[in-house]
Amino acid sequence: MNFSIDITESFGAIDFDNAGGVISYINIPPNENTQDKFQLELFNFVLNLIDKPVISSIKNQNPKFLEKMDEDGFLVIKQATITFEKMKGHEKLIRLLNQESGYLTHESYGPKLENKDKIYDIGGRSFSIPELLINFAIISPKKVTLDFTASNHTYISTYNELQKTVGTLNSQANRAQPEIQGIFDTNFSNLHMKSDFDAGYRVYIV
Image (cartoon, rainbow, N blue to C red; front, side, top):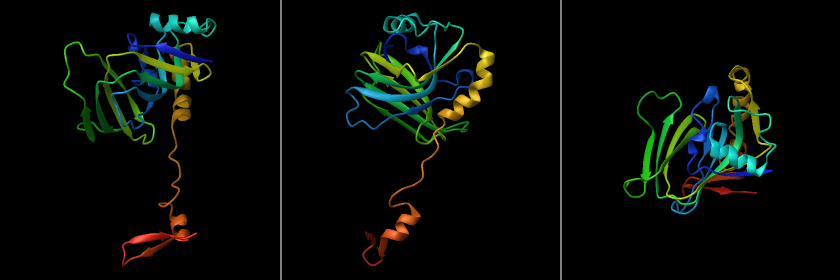
């Protein structure tokens, strides 16, 4: 079963900031028109069970899902999609994992902030490059939705139990860097590429 929760006014239910040691990852896909509907993926985060709108939405969609859970426990969502119906602008800050000061990249898009603009903060380690930390501030005037699959979760009833299992949760969420394939694969290049030094390019040979 898939859950779709309106979190426009309860975005704080998403705890991506090292809750109990849980390490979150974020994937921000390229989007040619960032003013249209914008989606990002978040992995391995805690969905707080103290936010009544979130709890009510889950119960309305599946009354049995929360039967053995309470607000003192930790509902860890392994993968979810956050959808912004419209994005007015954003700021993105990228740092190295252990960088104590400064940053690698800071970029902003959109008009200047106006009175009563809503700013949604989200972040985590980069899904594609885990050595990078990403903080993303999204200015959105419209609906924000959280979508995840019911089977894509782990519930931990106490903080002490979380401390015992957080290492496993983080190792399961950690994305190993895939092997290089294609032109930059040394074996592939040696087998299928011939360099034309005078012309300044390589030729692919079957």
